[in-house]
Length: 197
Image: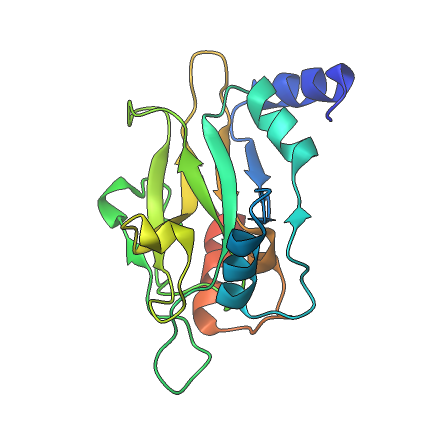
């Protein structure tokens, strides 16, 4: 878990104008004792190197809690792809909420087999802006889709508050490497982040 000194340092830094904290917690596979559900999740993402239970992010979750960020990373969801390719289908982008221009010339992120859903843990819709969602592979059963969901939250923006002058972004850490495929769209996202104001 994050130490109090770390939390205090980050809070102090975020009081400065023009700061931006990027948080990229990865997935949370098999967060149940139900072995059948773990098997369904395992078959859904299809990555044989990932065990049926892989619990990431305790440190990041403790940091988000300390910073009053009402988000929880859940699942390990496989994005839908364009048939016959490994290219993810285009994001559902909420460009009217994208005040920072993060999605300018951005249509997709990278393809990774198991990505988190950034679940909002409150419903007020004011403190966190969902900027983009990614469609889940509809051909692979999963408890998330069985509950009626078709897309997961993949890019969040938490605007400044009275206590925090800086921005907070949430996007999976795999989007900061070309290991899973580099595209012009992903390069544009990086450029937008680097030049964000």
